[in-house]
Length: 207
Ligand code: S6P
Ligand code: ZN
Image 1 (tube, protein in one colour):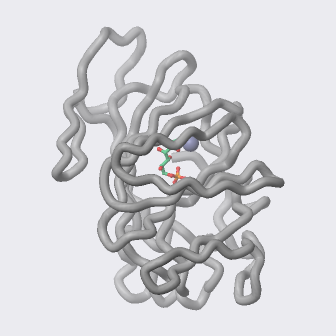
Image 2 (cartoon, rainbow, N blue to C red; image 1 turned 60 degrees about the horizontal axis):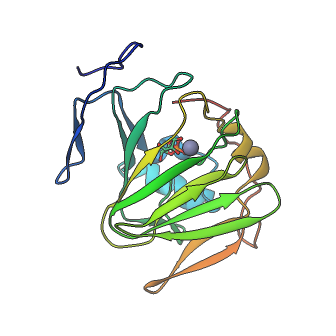
């Protein structure tokens, strides 16, 4: 099985290859390059430079074959490369679940942060190997690599939750995670030097 399975599924085990984040059996995989993250970094000029100089892979998402449909429980493993653009740590696009349902992340490798925003309140959870982060229904979420090595985590989420990327472009994420020496500065989303949330950003899409 190397693609998404069709229900009804039979019970099955998935073997996780810790060295290179493979799943066996494995479903769809997704690669996000810097050019896919237009409108997300505060420093647009720095983002343009990063795209022009190699358009690096920022993160990959490897999914199990469990489909994103009601009553199923898909899983995926995200690996965010270390890096920073305009002083801002590399991160996922971030999304809201259109059908507000919860999700869990389990840290597998590296040092990460889970930024959560409900449109009013913002939370920041440090995620390291062995730590489970809980995302309650209605909280948009973005992952950030705040370390010097790839940051990797397992996500488990309801199959009917969906992914709304436009919500984050419209509302922002409350805070940005900026590099400060070996530490992290969490700054207000619209701080000086930051652009507005999405003047040139992509439209809502799902992966
Ligand atoms: C799915 C879950 C993760 C993310 C992945 C990439 O609900 O939260 O699998 O999809 O970490 O992030 P994003 O924001 O590009 O979907
Ligand atoms: Zn999610």
